[in-house]
Length: 253
Image 1 (spheres, rainbow, N blue to C red):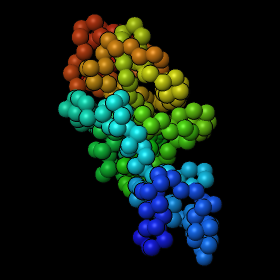
Image 2 (image 1 turned 90 degrees about the vertical axis):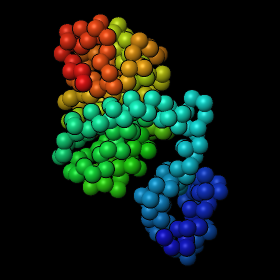
Image 3 (image 1 turned 30 degrees about the vertical axis):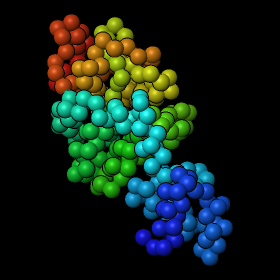
């Protein structure tokens, strides 16, 4: 990186956010387009996420996830279970497909195994997943909207609007809870609405949910068991759930 780009990176490190108007004044000897390209470079290198008026340091999202219930804590939970699920799920990802990757630490574990994949179009609402796959030989589309510091994911009307023009071959989804009666659920209403629409648009849906999620209902159900084609779990659920899966033609692996 050149000296100007390094200076912008230091500003991001020190202040967490920079604004295009501010940068135009500081670097008055270059064009606005050049500054925009600098911000694109910083985003491509994983230092920042561009916004409408500038850029935000990726460290802001990392710090935001370090609270008691944040993403970083969840990422460290049930690591072995998530690794088992990720390995199983990776066999269902085929090249030259349009694949939606949901937000969450379990699906992120799968994304870590897809860096050698080629020719896919990956769609995601998760900032960290998009950054992970951005340097691979695939097309990566990040849905817009408001970023939740607790999930590092975008949601809201902007994400829903973007989604409407997209065709999805395979949706790889995560959940915070599941019960045979209530289905798969999450704690955030906007996340639930986005997940529901993604599953409606996808030709096939794979659910990644470990055994600790079973018999834990969260506030918002986003799909029923019958809406899922494949459920990837670390261990087989109990007979009651398996019978329900068989009845609803859901493959459990």
